[in-house]
Length: 373
Length: 92
Image (cartoon, rainbow over all chains, first blue to last red):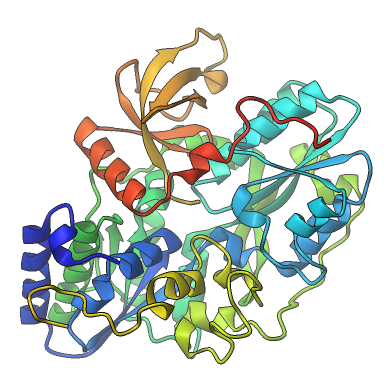
């Protein structure tokens, strides 16, 4: 963890924290959606710079965490086929399904490989024509353009031994779901900057209008986070509910036109299961009929993955903000990074992992060297 | 894994297929082959935000430096290393 003096711009962070304390007159609860932001908040102790009446909830923006356990089981089952090379982002390997994880599947002799990009998996399929290369295509809108391009190039190049096990989810519908949930405590959102760089801000603007909540597109540097939080609190104090782009340095209002074109060409919007949250309507992407031949579920006759699967993990409640990670009875005891009960403890962007790394070790450490603690 | 990483475009290959626009991009001391189709306005010398092998956005050099510094502090640069260049070998 860091002291504010060690931030890249400590004077700006101090000024924002002071302004925030001056602005707030009532308790407010904000949700940061992106798991990268959650980790930055915990690592830099941003939450401890906030006035006590301001609470941050850590949302479902960790793609690894929301990939259903049933789909991980399907990936594990594919590794038992001798012809299959299963390619995945590294983050996915230690996430438990119901029947173990991909790391164990690899140790048991399955051909599991970590790739940086879906195009690496496609290149592997071209090099190994006698194998079936399956790419575990998880992610949000930041990853969808890459997965869509891999599918497009596989079709265009007639690569017959490449397929995708798709768990592609959409941030906007999840934010909508959270606001509709009767337990929701969220009064304002910090929206994820890099997702908005792809999608643009239209959908977020709609969310503001439909639910009358402020949404501030925010970066993930400490000063950016404090700025996003302050803008959100100002709106709440003023009774406004608007879309603000506090991260215009990287986010254009229209998003990325060519990436959106490719996503729409390859994928269509479908209902998807989110681990811990259940099936959310129109909350994900599936391959269009023209690309169905690339769907690993079709190619290997996998059928719909069984739902649910977490008996003990309370990741769903964590993502809805009704349970803080360190309030979970299993936190740091039966559930630890080396033997996780669910995904949020093991993913590099999971909220439980952030609390474990930055809080469990030194929970009482004061945050600011100038005497405030 | 949702955070995009900034890099500098060093070269761009010639291709007739705009979806296959590819170039070498430098991230600190690491160089990678990156698909540039989604950043059609990015040229040699420009900085781009890259996620899982794709440039998603041209950004200015100051913003690239800011994001790089924060990712380094957050130890979020390992995505670049856990990778497949040189090509993956079959486990023996």
